[in-house]
Image (cartoon, rainbow, N blue to C red; front, side):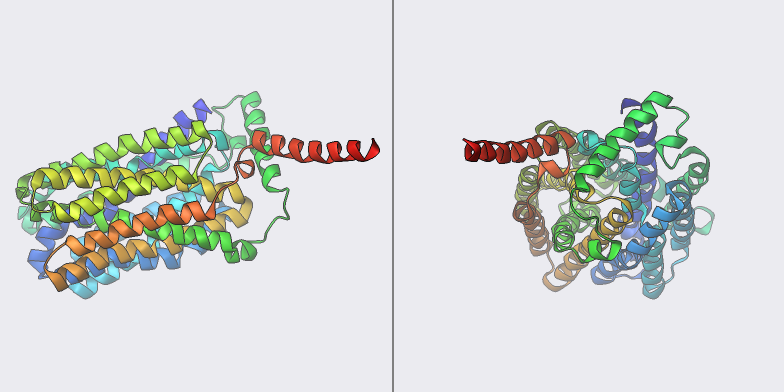
Length: 441
């Protein structure tokens, strides 16, 4: 597992880092772009969020194709396609083009994140899952933290060769995605059987472990893709995910403007944005490892959602203080991001095969409606009230809803850990045996 983690997780995190930079660099471009193109807060919020409409519509078909084609080819295709569309953002002239390209960027990137999650089910055992997902998903806060200073430097090219700084931002930050998409075709094996960097004994051990976990899930009749998509539990997990996505993107796509509103100088906003997401990266890794050690999921989600609620709600009332707004957003971001790797262990514990690919994609698709709603609501409420206060309170409440929903859904460790399933089976068999012995006596 150490070899798998060292070989795959840093590379996949790098892919996700590139994806997230291309997804959220619009937040750093916003100030210049809105000024040059005359966009209001409403137009920007709608355009920032409309990405998730295209993304959500194409999630399930994209992940089912990945199941058929394998992760290597399909993930590479996704990256190359989105890099071309992201670069085209530099050519935007008005609101219609902005909406169209953000929508197409969502279509191009659809299936990338659930595809990575599904791909890892071929490699990562349940006992290691939250920890490795936590490491992988640090790409979100790290990309946001590093994206600020990097974007600030690129934006200073404003006027070079007749292009605005925001145009340079879109053109240059897509280059890593294009390069990594090509490398992925060569570097990434589809399954452990293709991993020359594992010994034959290691490949056999990993295969046995993963098959044992599938056998736990196989104790119940194996659902079809359609049955999985219609499952009430899958739909409940989708609702759970909506709340955390509202919190994630309602903040990430607006945080530079939050800090500018708080009075942080324009030249320092990029550096200020780095602080909450550096804190969040540490919190995400620590809390996901704690979840693995405890072999517990839903209460870890609930506690993280409560922390997020406290931080985001406090930020709504501390928006006029540069220092305290950074502190409050740091707490909110740490809680929100700590939810993600633990949440994604839940669907992986329920299903496998095409049903898992489809269910993970559906959860991500429906959940990412929150990715549209979060930035849109913040922009709409800001336009209506002239303040970020109520938008942040709505975002905070949505994340709290995630924790409440997770507790209501619940989670059986026997569905995830083979040893838990075995001991559960032994208790049941033992109970029957004891009753039989009693009757015989």
